Image (cartoon, rainbow, N blue to C red; front, side):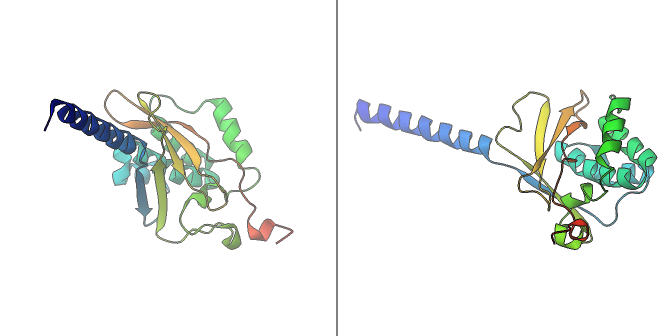
Length: 191
């Protein structure tokens, strides 16, 4: 093998390695979480294995559970969301925003569970399963993770942003899960 061939092979190997690393950086990661029942108290939420908050995916999945609880009981839902937010509890403005989002119905957070679609009024199948996925820009900002959750009532997945604490746990930083989705069939005059 000539020197030129060796240099060319070395360059080809480097290029292949770079392409492989880039492809893995853009590959999405997907995790599905299954709950036999939704937690009905902060203690029940904390008893779930996901409550260790070791990964941003766990925190995102529990955010869906907490928003479902918020739809039924604002006090308990607020406690759960504050737990997931760690050292940054909900502000009065954020609580007001949540209350406003639930004026039109309580079905939106349930739409993120498997089987919940407009045709069945967003009634999820049991056990409750939610899939959380990363995207190509999930790690754009150091210490933050942007994840996505598909709703049975929307064409595009919705964002949840998590922030990592110094101890390694991932806390809820922001969520965009309560934006409008298709109306449940029972509320749709055109259905």
